[in-house]
Image (tube, rainbow, N blue to C red; front, side):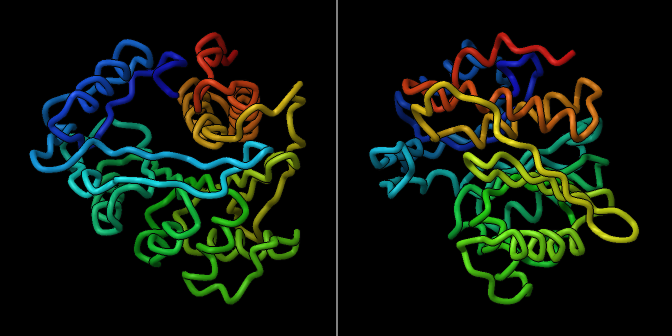
Length: 272
């Protein structure tokens, strides 16, 4: 996503020694502008390249999936030396909790701002330790992932239905455990985005109504699109609220694209 917008991210991953893995890396470079190196990609001899089949309902909402993700346990961890000079380290919860913690700590030591996409409710519960949270500057959860992270990290039981009070309480609790100047960008589906920001006296909340989309053709990939566009906008000098609006604009393009998780049309967007 970030590469499609013109930034040049280095991608750390693990693939199987198969045609799927080689094809994936080739497409990432040619279609998405993603950079990989021999040290950022681990080729697992006895594992398949990670595959995920999503099961969607009539509204294109996720109801289940089938996955083979074993190779991702081998994702290389970038060292402090490799991260020096990097502005943002973006993590998702497909790596193991131990690997994510080590990568985040290396990022902090190197001077990065560390971002997290929690990926799913079950994985959100695995990555909610106090030590990990204090390394994070940005989190991009949906409301269920937010509530699960807060509950698992000691914020008390919160219903996943997610009332406004519960969302504010969960975000406030997580912000109290995160790095200074931290932000949580909470996706609310058709209700838009809630931005929770850590300030000196009390957390601040700003609601951004949803962008108008002619027809929601697929929800798959919209959150990833928002996260990538948000980070790209910050790299271009955007303020946090401007980055949220730009991320929502990009996400609306993916919502209108049934063929791919991230719409190719996002490559035409420019932050000005």
